[in-house]
Image (cartoon, rainbow, N blue to C red; front, side, top):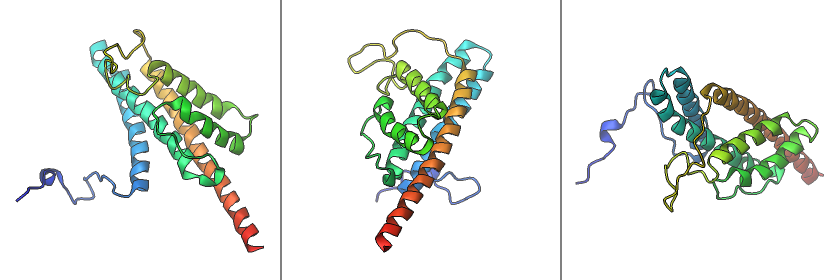
Length: 196
């Protein structure tokens, strides 16, 4: 008889248990918010650390979580609002390949003259891709061919990264609301056209 390898870890106590969602939509939302929260918690801890050897190990998972949060949000914005005609998210971890579709949605929702949301995300993507172009450098010390995953030693300010992730979160939250509002307008126009 097979035993449940999760039995010792299961809980039905809603007041203390953490749920892994079966529903992809709910699980997707919780992953996006979870990676953002993980990045913030790790960066706060790194900023509070008094010594470099307490701070340095935290920056890797913090940056990985930050980068993955941005990747998941970009894919969400492309996938979730088909009315905007942004297409299907590419099966890639490269932020630069995902960004152009989202940028089209930004232009549609915010116009080209309001550049601040574009600039926040473009600056963030440029920084994350400069550090980790393919999405493996924050997770692994070496590439698949045995070379260093980092281009050079670099010192980063955890507080500056915290400010940036909060700015990114604000922009992505506004984008989600704007994309949804635009999608609803398009859907209403299509319904009116269909009813005529």
